[in-house]
Length: 119
Length: 458
Image 1 (cartoon, helix red, strand yellow):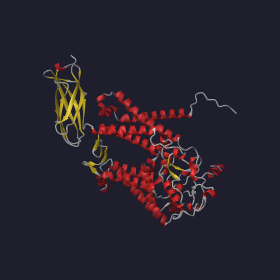
Image 2 (tube, chains in turn blue, cyan):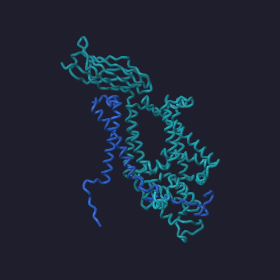
Image 3 (tube, chains in turn cyan, green):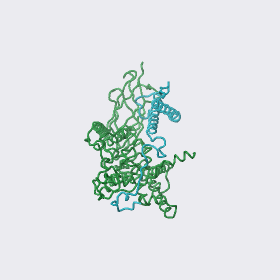
Image 4 (cartoon, helix red, strand yellow):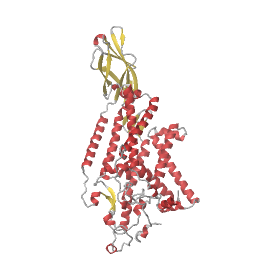
């Protein structure tokens, strides 16, 4: 029997998952920011409801990107969570912890349950 | 696929379509009541007027949300955020106390699925008839029944889509537009989109949404503890299960109370067997409790073989309603609700935004006067028209000129040019000026905002 040694620079599953979540959310937020800010000036948006804070153009872009990144991160992390906690491979074929429940004609269990067409 | 793989695949039995059997009982009645109340609110509320407007209207183009006598403006977004947090926290609280009550009785997926099932049962009959109909070849009866069901489903889905859009566009006008075929493009799109979503989710996907797509179903276990109310089968009492007549002596036959009728499986809308233990797919609708109680009654056994219980109670330990996490949720919830009620009641129904003219810092006028120009945006958030008085609080040297006259109709937004003038001797550089806006009539509404008044440095 061979002993398992950790392999240098190989990530475990959790590290891989979170790295993918952060990176894909960043890519999505970047693409979204490019398209959105090509059409809308974030300074206009911020000024319409928070002009008293006198937010500069760089901060406005930064805040808008941070907001987009946060939303993408949430979506990405939730997707990872749903996939990782979902049924395992073979589920659709009926494999897994629990078999498909069997059902039968209830009147076979007892002649005392009556009053309905069970079949 | 190779022959070997074929043979392996055939060993597994695929999940059959779930045909939930109709069930009657305490919890089924409660569920029907919940469906009637919630859907009643959904379909009727937009038609009810309140204080001169639709009782619940999310008027996106005007950026105003009406909820009965309250109007929320974009600046009140914090309240809507807080209400969402309250809704989330309430879900945590209810889940910790009573398990998946939300899933079983209040979730739109459950509520609309229930209605679609009623329509299916009305047209195609109960479980066995539906199974027979699906298995039968296409004949006149099957075509008629399936078509009638689709007509009912599609009509109901369209009505649902129409009502949904009616929360965003005044529903009476929308109704007229539908009748006269003058619906706008976006209204038509959203109506069809929401109808399709209702039809797809409640008619076709049903339990698959709860089993595979719902995030709440996945992380609700984090909110559970051993005192949370769950639906469970009393294994100690029920096993070993087996067929019998009610006259049989159970001790002699070595049987528990479960007669193995599988009715609990047949009524389950997600098609699980509750006797296998607590499962993520269980939406806690209590249909299995109702049907099992009926069977127990017919067998002259004690009810409650399947019941709402807690893990602690099942294991014979004492169950507690008041636990640290419940108290923490309750305190947080109470504090938030009280805070929101207090701040909504104490909202100032006037908003004033003073924006400096960006083109010039200041203007020198004849007579050694300095002028700063501002754009003033006044929002009258009250249901009454008002005239306003404007004054500078902290500087007697500054005189104000405004055009046009600051008067606003109910819920009107007005833009004005505000000029402030002061003699050069009044100061140097940047000065903070507090400007007070107040109504000239009843009720008194006041708001003070700050602005920068710029003077030459030399």
